[in-house]
Image (cartoon, rainbow, N blue to C red; front, side):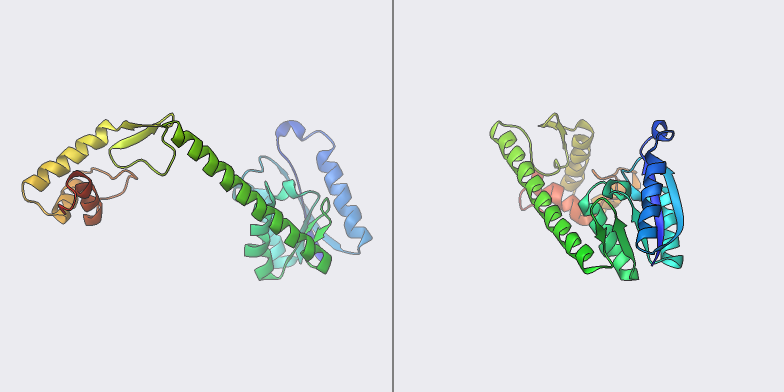
Length: 226
């Protein structure tokens, strides 16, 4: 099997230590022991928070796509932050191209039955982690709400969240007043939306107004009025 190696340290301060050399040495020993051809080793010094922003990793993946059978790295955290990110890489990128991922620390080689089994276990752990995070988030929100704090969803137009409390957004309140005045003058929701857009007045998300967006505001001001 032809493999592309990938080694990484997180900061420039680590560049002079043995980490990069140690990672590469272990990858080379692994390939030699299992009779794999190591096509090239890509070396990266930088943050591992986002795979998309790692140029050497992207080069490695491009070589895997065109010239190799898979990518090999010493540890999971050299490739991604957690199991979920690694699973996404395997399921969305590597498996559709019939490419393998080899992680020496976890004995994962997705080209083998054992490696696939370990990957399945990782998926179960990742699913459990997601459930636990969601449970903690919901519990935290519930506790905050019970204490009278704001905890759920995005604030409505005209409101903002400040340290867990809903406060009036003065700029948006002025826009609500504009909508109210134009509605009282007899304008339809689509006409009000066109006016707001013509004046360069954005929605809460910085987008253009639509008829439904104005109707939503009017329904809050005058229930059933729109």
